[in-house]
Length: 301
Image (cartoon, rainbow, N blue to C red; front, side, top):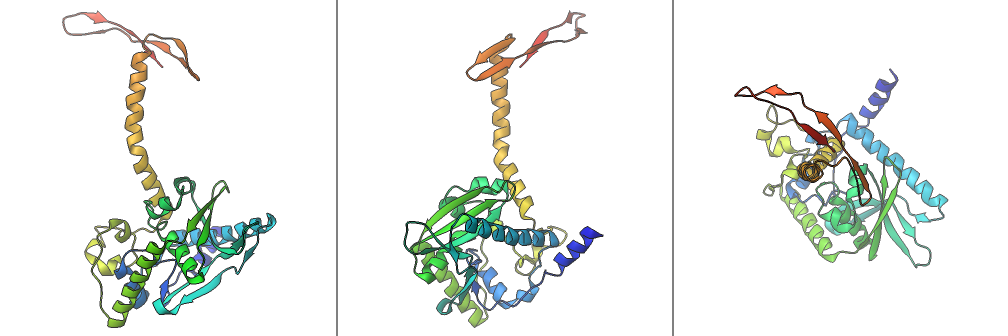
């Protein structure tokens, strides 16, 4: 009863709203067709499930924790959740805040993001965001870069928090004019298609199409009994991680076999920082063709 009541309150938050502008947080999506649908057919968008809503709410709660811990550390964050509008390109957004670094002049746009341990560990620098396999991560640099462009600031910072351990990771980003030009050209294209009531060509990127809330409109032949569209970020992370580990399994088995071959007959050995021990296992004799018997002791490392 308690859990169901909580889930029902989450379900009531799930809704679709009119989209009248290009959202800075979304413009990193390379599919112009998606953005046009988002502006013109928003009411037909596939709504996310309650599981994803719980993740969204948790992210909002963690952001409050991060802001509190920044304040406790004496780090000043101003203009929290400040709204932006770039009318020329019909771009809107809101920044998490502007952070002041002791010993430096001015304030820098700050974006706070929470994530699972797998994703947290995969992030090393801006390039790992831009070129990463997680499509939603690739939107982050575009978002922060737009805030820097709109504010006229040449540097901004991401503050990432591990949902499991609470660990932090900060990654600074320099203003990227090439990325900015690419983003503004995308915004202009979206605006033109919306104004003309037309659609651009589809992109060929399964990473975007597989999780797109407009797949049932854009690619209806792939929806229904053939595919089930699931918006479960944690499952995507696990599947990606499993794919990363695949080659390591075969490599482990190969090396393990080589180790056992070299150590055959050795009961105890100290090798570098490792102590390797083995035990003898008696195989019971059994009859083979010709009426002969055999038995062998083998060592297991």
